[in-house]
Length: 297
Image (cartoon, rainbow, N blue to C red):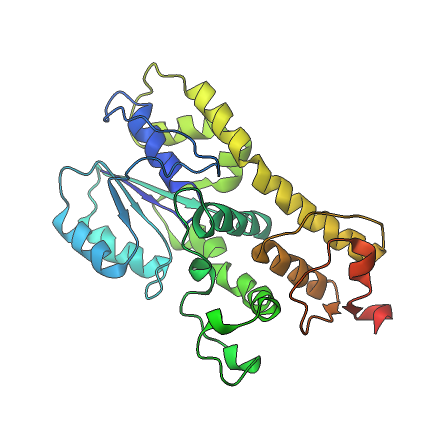
């Protein structure tokens, strides 16, 4: 069995597809890269997303499953606990792979992938629950009548996300130190050295590459991810231009990208006049007028 732990958005479906489509040993499936860049066009063998199913699967170990893809963390179990729960059921012949983000930059990029492929994806469209979930921390700070984050106005939800998302991604960054004995693959390598990293994953999994054109797939897949990396670069440029008042305009952004801009401005010493700001400015000069902090106080 090949066990692939990953955070949603970190290409777990892509890895499973490559293992099953481009190796001699597994079932030679076929699927397409969707318009959002995801590989949600095929049915995964065993994608574990909650603690009950996680424990049930590993205690039973069905022989029909060659690739299992648990996510981490669960709402009620962090990565160390999940590894502790499954380790007794993993044998020396099993292959253990964990995908992780190696920096805040790539953790933020993964949040954008989560938005585009899971919150508002072509095949999967779960809304903002993946970001907010059951996190009700300080919701009433905006309105004492609120009982759930989905009652918040756009500006309130944006500010709330901007305040907590760095805390939320800490566990992703800690993953390598929490998973001794597991083979590690970073999203940076998957995005910047795609074909070689996929070949490495095949080797780690104890499989051999078949005659299908992995080079072509890797090229097409990588091209389909570029829009998210471009978006992250735009966020950084927007923040820089807002602070320096260099004239720069951009198209309307999603709420996660907006929250990142707000967070990065805060970390640079600026809050913004955000009360009632449901429509974010899309020009750096206009945005600069909203800054509070440094010489803008």
